[in-house]
Image (cartoon, rainbow, N blue to C red; front, side, top):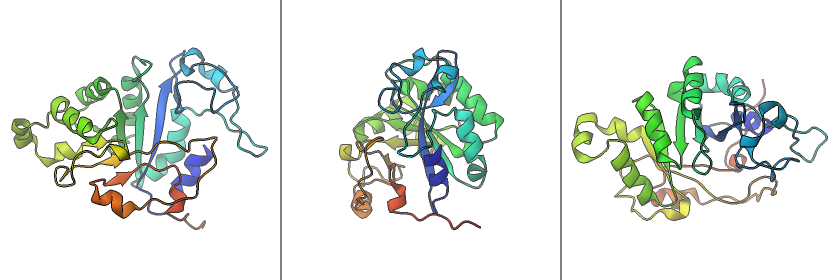
Length: 245
């Protein structure tokens, strides 16, 4: 929760990305790995814990205060005001390795109840999950995750109605609502081929509990490759925090 709170205070930050999974008793929690071993003092798969059991696990911070695995409700409570002011939230459904039946309905119902639909982007490596979301809401913003941008591109065209005939009918807006989310080293199409696309690239490595590297990427070179946005673990290296009032 501390990381989300600090990120929300960065000036000119476009959005925040997080991963969701479901507990054994159907609660949606925010955690990256399918297992709890790397980031907590527990062992095993998220799906094998109840929400109450997960809440007993500790996340070391290097300080006295320890963190807990948050629910999506807690994170949305924290970010609601920022999202109402324009902050985007990319919610990755972590269901490509371990199925989470019903997670799409639950998360969409939750964001709709909070009236945050236009501030949320749903992404997943499991394209059928994104199709399910788009089937429930034709205007939902989705991000097609894969390693190569060409795979993202052809999934976009084949699965989300952005082929030539349908594109004439629905227009550029539908492309903008179906972004490409490739690995930054998987840019195997040119910038010209990606014209008009939203391309949000992700990066690997340096995840907690590894220490921050403190290095900066050459964002200009990434833009030349056709990348329009980036998912970063250290946005504070590029943006400064808002002054407290």
